[in-house]
Amino acid sequence: MERELEILTNAIVDTLNVYSGEITEDTTFLGDLGADSLDVYQIVMAVEEELGITLDNEAIKEVKTVKEAVELIKKAEAEK
Picture (cartoon, helix red, strand yellow):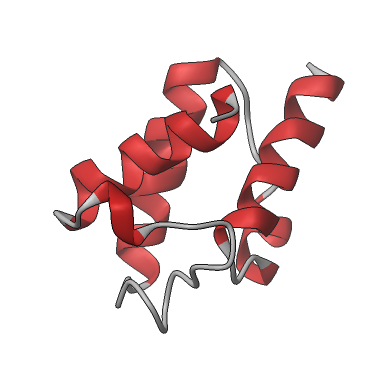
């Protein structure tokens, strides 16, 4: 598992109390995981803190799947 996906998965598990085996790249935050906007914000904060990056708030609003979130994280790391 790539580092970004692992960190994101850990943040999702900690925030939403779900089993990591339920999370794939195609998993949606709202539909599959039942996350609300506050949950997503907590997940984002955990990832930002872990990686020392800042994610674009407007871009975060557009993210629907775990794969899209990983791509956003990778982009922020590249710009760091």
